[in-house]
Length: 206
Length: 206
Image 1 (cartoon, rainbow over the protein chains, first blue to last red):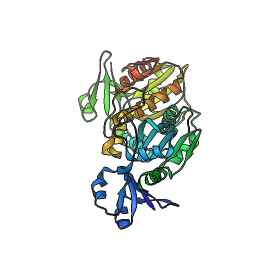
Image 2 (tube, rainbow over the protein chains, first blue to last red):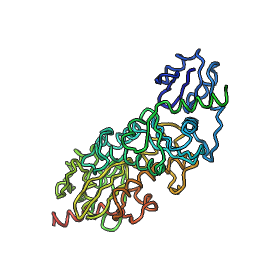
Image 3 (cartoon, rainbow over the protein chains, first blue to last red):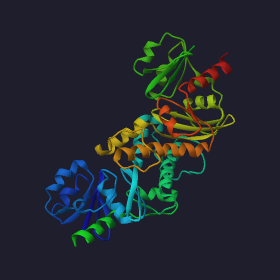
Image 4 (tube, rainbow over the protein chains, first blue to last red):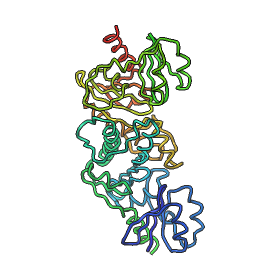
């Protein structure tokens, strides 16, 4: 069974064993004739995906109760996978959602790490330093690169801890692993979204 | 006495009474023949500013001890003005510095609010909602606009409170006022940088 999670930067695939990513330019043609289940948050691809006969959009089968209006399908699926705790998907954007006993309580959105780096670059060439993930968050920064790295990472970590309040933190997404050393009671699994997708298939399509 | 603080988006002026801003395209010609004291963080304007006869660059007169390498002149001047507490300058970028009894302890940098908005816009049209400063930080977001506003504002506030640890917070910069309702023990003064500049003039040029 082939699963595909289409984002704003890449399409991620899972065949039950391995996770890999494909560029948004190529994946449509490459897998056009295969049977697969997908979710998609990419607005630009929405219409084209409707026409692919063998591709099944799992969004139509999701049962997910929340008072949050307009929750992205990827966030819903991640929340279905974790059931209880905080789900963090760090990719183009960083989404953070709180689930308490299978109930969605709300969540927030921050830019992804690359978006922060690009934002600094836009502001001034002096701030075009990139984020150093080896920065020490327990000591105040002493140069520009540290100041940027500390600012970005610690502000994100601070808000994740604030929503988690000791609950388990589930990290996923291309940059999820980068947050792992900075969070207590957290684990990283690149397959979380796919576990949620499998759950939908099992509950609603089998 | 005319003071000018040149940033990456605007040049801010203070004549002892009033603060106003001028576009970076116009202010050089407009004030070319006036006598003024300035500080500048704009790399693109650096060389042109050297040639203006009546303009005095206060950077050359600053005495400021810190172990932080490459601290921007605007941050130094703000720190000179506050002496003890946390200085927050919210403009194109948001800089946050801790001063303890006239000693600089370090600081961090985050993107400015407009940079966050632009970053979200770049990621996806769905995230192009702008920041709502009336958002409630005590209740989890229930839609995309709230999720973005909560994420940006609360992550910044969280990190400012973390560095302040109850110390007085001094806000300045074009967007400094927007942070005021979210912080305890904080005050906003658009003239802070100019107070620092005046201090340098008094101590070193009079």
